[in-house]
Each structure stands twice: as C-alpha cells, then as structure tokens.
Image 1: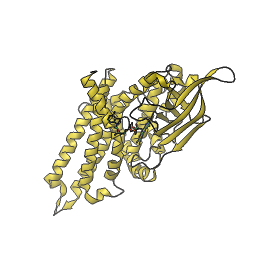
Image 2: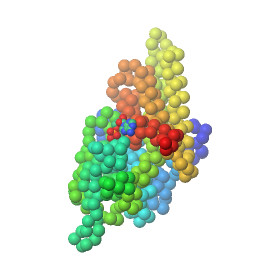
Image 3: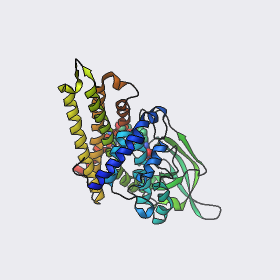
Image 4: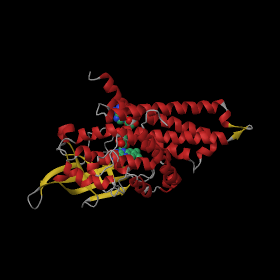
Length: 386
Ligand SMILES: Cc1cc2nc3c(=O)[nH]c(=O)nc-3n(C[C@H](O)[C@H](O)[C@H](O)COP(=O)(O)OP(=O)(O)OC[C@H]3O[C@@H](n4cnc5c(N)ncnc54)[C@H](O)[C@@H]3O)c2cc1C
C-alpha cells in the first residue's frame, strides 16, 4: 500500500480492488470484444457510492476528495479501462461541470440522479473542426423569444467523440453564442436526452476503450430553456478549462491503473513462462524491464498525488495536473509496451489483458488534451508571457 494514503484511502482501495476483481476484470474482455457499455459495472459502482464521488452530500453525492477518487480510479483502471473512462466522464467531467458551473437550483435539479447513478452524464466540447483549439466552436446558441414571449435558446451544430454519449441522459454542452467575442463567446448549457431536435449517433471503430459508448451529437434547432445555461453567457470557456484542469488528474489516475494492470500481468506471466529450462523472471533482461516499469509507475503516482493534493487544498494546479497527465499517460504507454513484450507472442493475441491495455492506453495521450497540449500548458507556466 502507498505510504502517503491515509487509513480511509487504504480501506477504499481495498474495497474497490475487491469489487473490481470480482465484477470488472472478469468482464473486461467482453466489454472490449463486443463494444458493450458496462452498465452492470456502472450500477455496481453506484451501489458503492462511487458515481457520486467528489459531489457534496447536500447534492446527493458521497463527497470525498480528488485524492480519494484517484485511489478509486487506479483500482478501476487496473481492472477495466473502459469502465474507468465511463466513470471519469460521468464524475469529473459531466457532474463536475454542473457542480462548478451551476447554481444551487441547477445542482439540485441534476446532481442527485447523477450521483446515485440513476442517470448518466457526458461532456461535449469537441467538434469536427475543434479539438485542441477549443475556441473555434461552431455549435451556435442563439437567444430568441418563444410563443409566450419568454426568452429561450436555439441550439444548432454537432459534437464529436462524446464519451458516454450513446447512453447518457444529461449532457454539458459547450456552445458559441458570439463568434466575434473569442473566449467570451463560449457558453455552457445542459441538454437533456429527448430534447426535440437532439439526435445521438453512436460512433464505432475505436482501437481501444471500446465500451465507453462514444457518440456524435447533432442539434437541429433544439429549444433550450434559459434555466439550462450554466453560469452567465460567455463564462463557458473558463468553465471548460477549469474542469479539464482537474479532470486531467483523474486521467493520470486511470493511467496508473492501466500501468498497474500491465505490470501485474507481466510479473505473473514472467514467473510461469519457462524458456531454456527457467522462468523468464530469472533473466536479467526481463527483471530490468519490470524494475523500470515499477519506477515509472511510482513516479507517475507521485505526480498524480501531488496534483490531486493541490486541487483538494484549493491551490493552483494547472501545471501540475498537466505534468501528471503527460507523464502518467506516456509512462503507461511504455509500461504497456514492455508488458506485451514480456508476454511474447501470447501478448499479441486476444484475449489477453496486456493486448487490451496496450490499445486502451493509447487514447490517454490524446483525450482531455493531447500530450502536445500538456507540454504547451507546462511550458507556458514555466516561461510566462513573452
Ligand atoms: C476515445 C475518445 C474519447 C473522447 N471523449 C471526448 C468527450 O467525452 N468529450 C469531448 O469533448 N471530447 C472528447 N474527445 C476528443 C478529444 O479531447 C480530442 O480528440 C483531443 O482534444 C484532440 O483534438 P483533435 O482530435 O481535434 O486533434 P487536433 O486538435 O486536430 O490535433 C491533431 C494533432 O496536432 C497536435 N496539435 C494541435 N494543436 C497544436 C499546437 N498548438 N501545438 C502543437 N501541436 C498541436 C495535437 O497534439 C495532435 O497531435 C475524445 C476523443 C477520443 C479519441
């Protein structure tokens, strides 16, 4: 166990590890192979209170800090990558956007059913023309009068790559209400499934994280009540950056899980597999690979813990969360690759945990800001304005 975890976090890790071993790991290959959304697994996490983590109890959540959620995600990620992506998107993207962007009335309206896991949330920022360049949003939000003379919005456009999108009930959508206003033109609204004019098109063909129900969202003259706007008009960009700054810490925690899953599989296989009359674990080439994997995993864990601790203390954490996400995702890639190498040909075939982790890990260097964007965030923080 980690020396920097308190007693409660150590117990949390033990509980989630046991749940994950019994309920997530045995189904991870099926989730991947058949591209099924892990709904039973999500419900099981809800019963443990984990879908309401970091949401205060007054809004139906189970509370907890980001350090606690980090502990959970490492265990979930080690057992099933897709389930960890579903959970991060639901908690630290979808629910947190409503928590941080919403009024108390909006929090009461949406968060209790999300925290309990009765409903699922999603976060829709990316469009066909904008990923890294999140300012170039084309999805438009126009204020109009309805038949009763009351103000409402009309939403038009589309979003891509929306995790949980195909199954979600509540979507935090980032729109542009004024294209000439730069970041002050971005406004966030909540859109509920079933809103007339809102179509959800599942997207298939991902190389990994296949269970997370990715979808394209299309808005065709959707009427959105003013009461669904999060914050004021023009506050959406700041909100998106704030949410991504904190959620990246949880992507780093997910990477710890993927890396741990790969290292555990490599350790176990290396003791069973004999070549030239001895287990491959007795060969220095294999031992040194595993030593390097363990060092990288611990370094990633320490960076992630630091970022989560800064967040929990309410201290600036943008650079540190980018460092944690950058290092943990790339380290998980190196660790997954070594684990596959240690498995030899068996690791290249399905079903094999290391083959799945190798594919699942790749997107962690892309979503919630690519590695290049993390390096931009870090270097800007180091150099400042020139
Ligand atoms: C499986 C999956 C799930 C996702 N889930 C969600 C979700 O739930 N919600 C959501 O809103 N989005 C989601 N995304 C979108 C994801 O966040 C974007 O794909 C990501 O931010 C990169 O944007 P892009 O794909 O448009 O790449 P681009 O921005 O087009 O980048 C292409 C390449 O150029 C590089 N690049 C871009 N700009 C610069 C620069 N200034 N300097 C140096 N290099 C640069 C990038 O690093 C990258 O290598 C998901 C994506 C995937 C693949």
